[in-house]
Image (cartoon, rainbow, N blue to C red; front, side, top):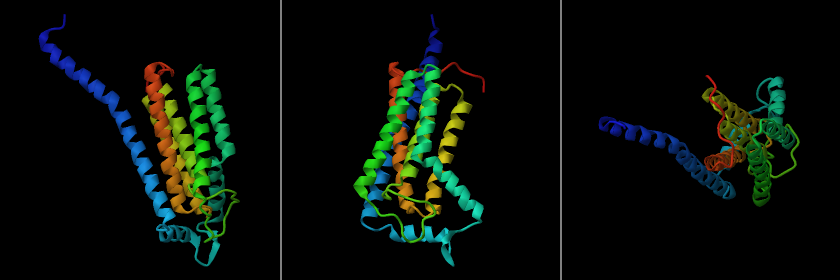
Length: 247
């Protein structure tokens, strides 16, 4: 029997535990709504031509005024930007996704592996559809430092890197118990996402608003799939977190 004097305390602890459990899904829902609104606003401004001054100012700020074919900074910075931008290519993202799926299969997280496949594959399809819908021309204000073949809005590299790295990070932390490892996974995903998107503007192949839109959609997609993973995990359809490891 629990003494009466302890019952209010226990109810308070249960309430706090429930609040902590539900606050992250609530924040995720708000992030999804905010991401959709931000993308919608950006798309409207781009279609109306209201972002032209901002886009041109940023692109020109990243170029040598005496030679617009020369990005600012030493030559090794431009070469490094080319290397970084490849982290958002279809080939690299596909290899990374397959590697993660292989790892999840080896550790018997088959449902999580299927979730990764569905989320990344669906995101790549979404990127292709959005580019076809908007058909924005690539910037011709400065010479392109790397070849491009598709439409400009939203940035495929920015969107795909965001949805892939953030989705992988968000899904992997659902099967990871260590808080330190969880923080590390998300931090790496965010840093790589920003570096890839920034490299596209630096190399002159995207307007800044293309990259912002790509980040919005990619981050929203990743958050949405984190919610799906959480829901399935609570239902028992996706493997729960592993045994707690010491931090």
